[in-house]
Length: 229
Image (tube, rainbow, N blue to C red; front, side):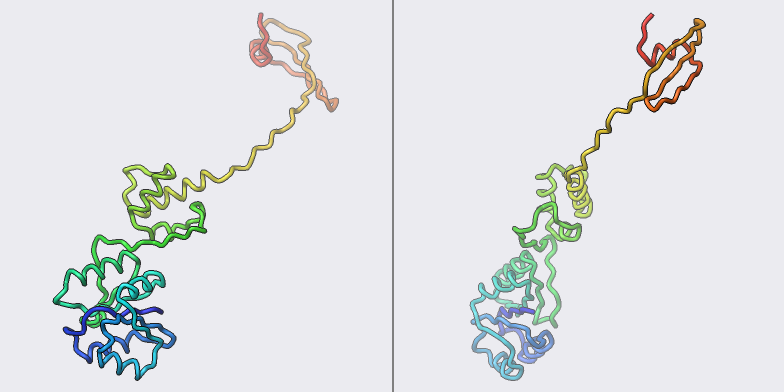
């Protein structure tokens, strides 16, 4: 797992910082720490105690790494810079990065109205997307995708409905098996041998030699064979 630690240590106690880092860290995790925290003695003590794989990098680089690696952001909230903190949170959530508030017992920070984006997979074809992958997309992207492929109507307002419409469209676009054209069947010859004015006797000689004789209404025979009076 990749973790990133950013923010300010001015409003967070040393014990909270140490305990938070210890709680989330597991063997083989990698921690990227903002270089603005390089002088924090508690962080230094924690690094010496657990010897994790850790790097001090610029805050912007921490954010980029976590977005690329689907990591988790540990944010030490700076009460003096709330706008900057909000910017970090929105940027992280928009890139699918989980945010934990170090100053509040590692409570997850959730931003209403911001949906995590799904990184494009250029090698994956549209027709190969699964239902789970579709509903994980932001609603706006899902609508655009459905509209692009002719599956969108204003009645489709949920991710589930849009995903089902897209998958249905994919199924309809799959190549349908060609219908086999059956060779014409030789039924033999038909002969009308007598007529009473209302009924007639029909003799059918099939190609395999069978002969069938029967009565049929004259108007029906005329209708079937296209006879005209």
